Image 1 (cartoon, helix red, strand yellow):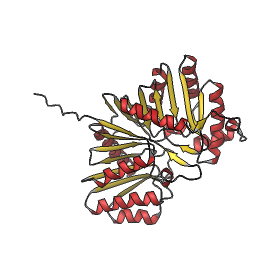
Image 2 (tube, rainbow, N blue to C red):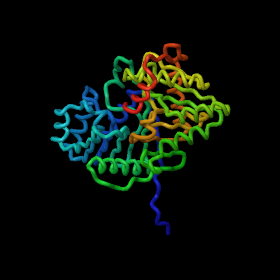
Image 3 (cartoon, one colour):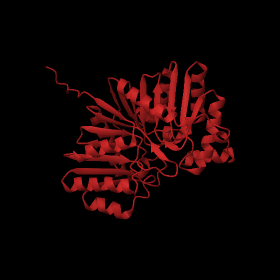
Image 4 (cartoon, helix red, strand yellow):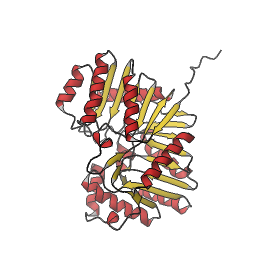
Length: 350
C-alpha cells in the first residue's frame, strides 16, 4: 500500500501584459473562499493600492483569513489611514522593519492554498498608467498544484519572521520542469547558485532582462566568460532608472558590459521592470531578483525556473515586444559624471 501523499499536477501561466497580471490576480482574489496571503515590496498608496486594499478588506469582512506583508522601506508611503482601515476590517497587516538592510523584495500571493502568483510586479499605478519613466512592464507567473504548498510555507516563514519568531527555513520546491527557490534556501546562497547555474548551462544563447544592472565584479566576469566560450549574451535594460543616482551607476556597468562583448539593448520610452532570463530558448527564469549585489546577497527574493514550452514562448514574445522599443546603447547611455567610488557606495545602499 502506497502511503505517500499524492502530488498535485502543477500548471503554470506566464502573464506578460500588466493589465493581464492585475486582472488575473483580482479574479483569483474575488473567488477566494478561505484564505488570502499577500506579500509585496511596494504596496502603493495610490488608486491601484487602494483598489486592492478595498478588495482585501471586503474579503476579511466576509470571514476569510487575510494576511498582508509589506516591506517597511518599499511600502513606506502606505498611509496610516489605509493601514488602520485594513486592520479595522480584520486584515492581518505585517511590516518588515524599515531599519533592516535586507529587504523583503518578494512579490507573492497564495489563495486558498491552491493558487499562487509570483514575479516582479508590485501593487502600484505605474504598471497601469505609467509615470515619468513611461509604462512599467513586468511578468508574473500564476501557479497551481503542489508547488503552491511550498510557497505557502514560505509565506508562513516570512510572517513568523516579521513577528520576531525564529523558525526553520522551508525547503525550496523542485518538480518536473519547474523549480522555485528563495534567498534563504541552500544556506542563503540560492540566488548566486541559480545565477551560476544559468551561466554554466547556457550552450549558445542567454538573454537577461533586468531593471537594475549592477552586478558584482565576479558576476560580470562570469558573464564575460560565457561570451568567451561562444554563448551569445543579450542584456536588455531600461533607458532610465526610477532613482537618479542609479542611472549613473547603470551607465558604468553598461559600458563595461559592451567592452566585454555583451549585446546590450536599451529599452526606450518605458520602464522595463521584469527580472527574466531565457537560456538557449528552452528555459525561463523569472521572479523578483535583479542583477545586482543587493538582490544576490542581501534581499529576501524568490525566483522560478521552468522549461514549459508555453512559458518559454510567452517569455520570448515579451522580449520581442521589448526589443521593438529598444536600440543599441549610445555614448550618452554609457557616460557617467559621478565618480566611481560614489557609484559603488550607492550600489550597496539602494
